[in-house]
Amino acid sequence: MGSVQSCVMGSLCFCAVYLLYGHIYCSYRLLKTNVLSSDRLPSFAYLFIKYLTKALCRTPGTIYNTSKTEVIYTVLNCRLDHHLLRSFCRAAGYGWDYPDSEYRDTPLCFPESLFLRPMLMLLTDGNFRLSPAGLVRVRQTLKTLQPVDELTKGLFTLQVRILNYRHVDAGVEVDICLSASSRCSSLVWESVLTLMSKNKLKASRCSPVYEHKNEADETDDVKQVELRVPRVTCMQNALSSSEYSPFQLFSLPARLFGYRSKMPPTLWMLSVCFAEIEKHKGVKVITAPVSVTAQFTEPVLASGKVDIRFWDRTEPGNPSSAQGLSFRMQQHGGNKRHVVGLISKPYKI
Image (cartoon, rainbow, N blue to C red; front, side, top):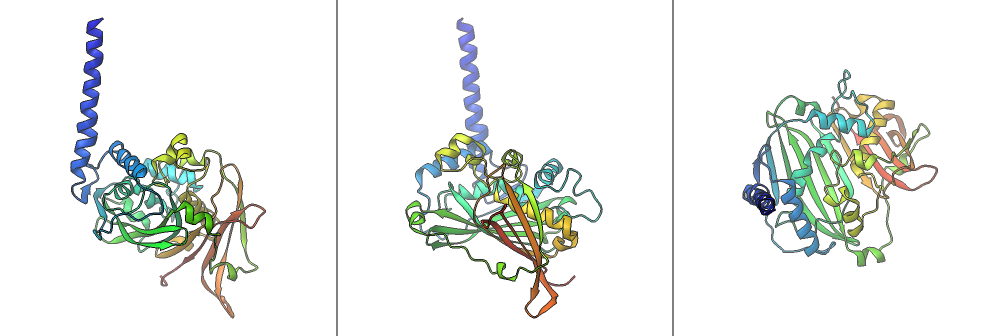
């Protein structure tokens, strides 16, 4: 009996030492620099502990410390995970064989799925001035200067950095820039996310305001696609389309921090729009170089239905001159908007 207890105690001690050294201490040392290699990144266990600690110590909607220290992380020597790419394509409605089909580029939103760990590194950084819990995506601008497929051809670099903070009526917004550069160090893909940290007291007094310039130019030639949101959307996107919150992956902590269950990530919503647009308008519409602006309003609940509408945006008085393609995802049979955006070509190819 005593030998069994000794073995159990020895095993527990070994596990404790492994956790403290392998996941805590080594990760702590790695984050002494903001330039890391993809094969030597801090563990998720360490980042989740930091996330939880910071979330418990800070109130959403409040800016902490006035330090102007730049928060930036660069991850070198990244290599594409083709299994992750296939999973993303299947979850976003592109199909299991995408992008192997001829003349198809890697999905426009896919690079964002590579930023889960760098984003957690940034959100848990001591100089990040907000609580990492409860951040909500409200806007996004995205552009590609080269085909995203460049990232499949060799090693590439990821970078995430804070651009600025600003007070708004409902809380505080922060702009975060994500970028991916090719093996030749040339910029391939860039996205600026605007996340809001809501102040519950202010948000309860603020009536939601929704404005988007793209709505007024809807024409008679509108394509509409009805889509059912699958119940397993969150599970499919837990790794490939995370909202950068560990609490989104676990139902109980999610409820404790105020998250609604069965809510697809906004990245999934945007990706599905692009997938349907490509199917009906052709791949050239979203082939690099391209620029996208999107605004996120009401969340989508899984197992419901949505309508995706898109139409050519034309210059007033000159219907033959296409200025881009407007799109939106809205409640099926209703007027509640979930995503509204515009796809445009920054210059002619």
